[in-house]
Every structure is written in C-alpha cells, then in structure tokens.
Length: 158
Image (cartoon, rainbow, N blue to C red; front, side):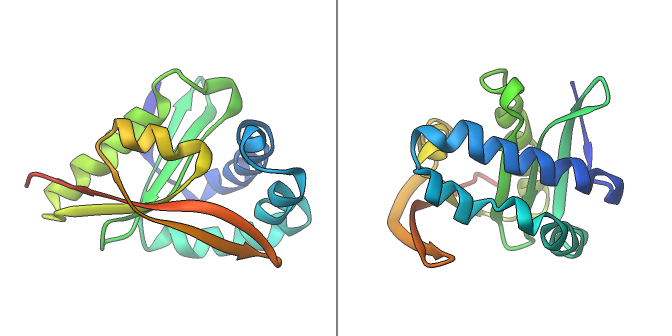
C-alpha cells in the first residue's frame, strides 16, 4: 500500500468510495434515511466539484493499493481532519491508521498542536483508540434529517 498526496484525477474514485463506504460501513449505526441524507447518489456531480475546490486548499492524501484508492484523508491548515474514509473492502487493514498517522505527522511538522474532527458514530471508537477525546456530541441536520456525530480533539506533542 502506498500513501501519496491527493491529485485531482483521484476525485471521481474518491466520491464513489465515499458513497459506498457510507452506505455499507455506516449502515450499522445509521438508518437508510440518514445514510441517504449523508451520501446522496444524486449529488455525486456537485460533490465532485465541491471536493475539487476544497482539496486544493488542504493537506490531503490517498492510500492506494494496486491502482485502487483504498482510502483518503484531508486536513485543514488549522488542524481540522475533515474526511477520513476507507473503502469497504479495506476495512480493518490499517488503512485509516496509516492515513491518520500521515496527517498527524504533517501537523507536527507544521507546528499544529491540536487536531479535531467530527466523527461519526461508526468512527468514534477508532478515533478514541488513536487518542482523540470526545468534547461534544452533536446532532447535525442533513436535508432536514438529524445525524449524530462527535467533536473529538487530540493534542499533539510538537
């Protein structure tokens, strides 16, 4: 597995990975109505454009295995870990750990002392194992549908 910087050509595959990961992996913690509000197939084109714009201004990496994107992560210059998604076929194989470790090392290099994320119910335990602490449980609305997630913070030794 190779972790490399995000390239614009990755975006289509990342949007597909996002949709399928949300609908397959997160289905144990969210209803179908919530999953459809979170990741709507009809919004794929809009999401690609929005992601192209947002990834350009961020630290972003993809994990690649034999030409297939196994996962991706992005972080703002303020230390917000926005998206961390792993392909359903690559779950529990160290992909998320490798990607998160990469942005944490980059944050230390940039003297960013604190990272934070808004973790799904599904991802909460993963982030806790990586040293992130819940500071707030939130209910966010997507298309009028409430979704639970957690604001989680990790202080880095820099």
